[in-house]
Length: 433
Image (cartoon, rainbow, N blue to C red; front, side, top):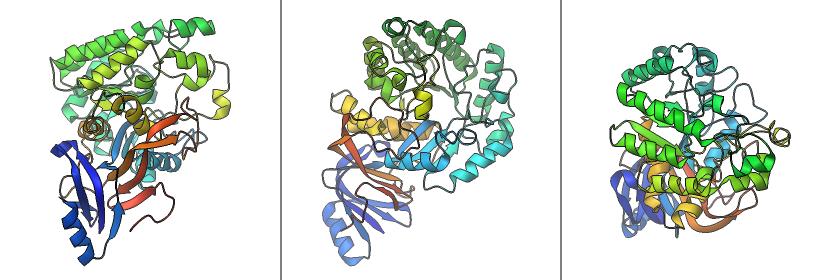
């Protein structure tokens, strides 16, 4: 048995935000009680106790947009190191993207990822691809892949340009009641990806990625989703126009979702100018008006999910010239501090709203048994201090490609608990009472 006392319980699924103790037994949530009752209980029962004074106690975070690069690119990250990074960041569950080598477009690769995930302390799920080989030409056997454990479908990293094929994919996703997540960038409009067309592209003397590349596909795909009823997730939204399109679509249908990354609500194209390839990502960092629109979208629930798009790359790859270096940054270990620093501390979101978007909503979209502290639910819990200052770095990830390295951020994860067992402890030693 484990008791977490003196903390503030935050559980949006049950509209709880109060000072209380969390009691865990046999890997499940047993009770939320006042501290005095928990103290009496602990005095009469053999158990471990965590003192969560000045900390938030919440459902472990859920990230539905993660790249662990396994199989095929394990020099960047693998399922084991990715799991350690996730646990350090306060995550209990993640959904992996399918753009591995080979891609997750077949039962064998799907089974490999699922089984290897079971060897970690993290709850790991994976999407399968929408199209065979991620070539956008023929659909995978979505029904079979779903029956074998695929949590959803995405060709993330390769936008789907064939409207007819995407329509059939959305029809299947609707029938299977699983999310289809889309990377919205029209490559025909992009000269050099990863850098915003504007001030940043002018600085580097390259063509860059215009906002129209995102806007055009979001507009097209929202219409298809509304027609088919598919559960659609617009991934890593980056433009103010894209946010507005999602806002309007949500008024017309209940199955429209959108995610924002911490880097898109924290940074602008100025970071690309300052940090070069370390701040190169697809879609790119854009203008301050876009960043503010994303925050506004989070505030009014137009954007209902915060996801990291954790994308590890080696130092050697990121050291290449701006047009050759790969896009993407790691994000699992900085996501919660960035949300606290740039959303909570600024008054944009409450802590309950942050947990809703980083735990409850992503769990609901992917039908995961997570994101709640309801009695009887799996005891997947994060304990974190919103007031603690930390310096980003010392990553558990195999890669360290991040423009946030060395930055002072508010918020630190103290414990990550999976099925009632402490799997990450920031103190590095026994911290029980």
